[in-house]
Image (cartoon, rainbow, N blue to C red):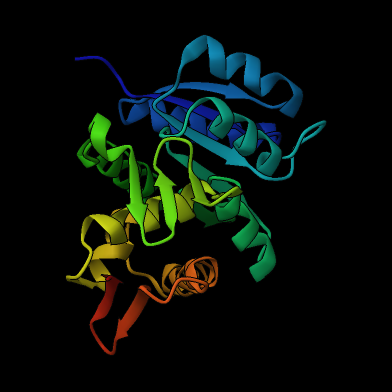
Amino acid sequence: MSKTKILYVEDEMFLGKIVKESLESRGFDVVMESDGAEVMQTFKRINPEVCVLDVMLPNKDGFTIAEEIRAIDEKVPIIFLTAKTQTDDLVKGFSTGGNDYIRKPFSMEELIVRIDNALRYRHNSRPASAPQDEVKMGKFVFHFTRQTLLAGKEERKLSFRESELLKLLYENRDKIIDRKDILTLLWGNDSFFNSRNLDVYIAKLRGYLKDDDSLAIITIKGIGYRFITA
């Protein structure tokens, strides 16, 4: 059985060595980079199944790297490692295509659980069939693969997280989706931090769709959401 290949990017060499060896002892195949400028070349060479990125790196930061990865691979899980704690920084991480976020210092057990959750979500995701790749929602056309929302001639580029959430809502339209299920599917767990991020993304999607009265993301208090498409 082949090992899961991880691209691990960390410029603190002592920490990086410990994390790399710990992951390898758990059966992962880890390729480590310390220079942000070298990451994309390595990414293309090894085609990893998971990317674990430090945010603060020499020459190119983790957010920029995530955007470059998303430009060529929309599905590979990206987990950020950072000492940053500001909400704006966390939201920026998700808006650039991150799937998860771990604050330093962290335990190896937490990192491994996050990696396993990211892999489980990727493997359980149902690929959209050709007819479903582009769907009509009221006045909008939503393209899953391109992550765009088109209204007439106006096209909005969605972040990876926005696109995945809107896709989940659309696929379960006119049904009540449990909030906990959304958090588990898209974030890996229903922690308070992830719950706050879900609130941010629901608000953003509502803002994008507000010009069409036939569409609404309804909050079902204490349960979850219902996406109405008249």
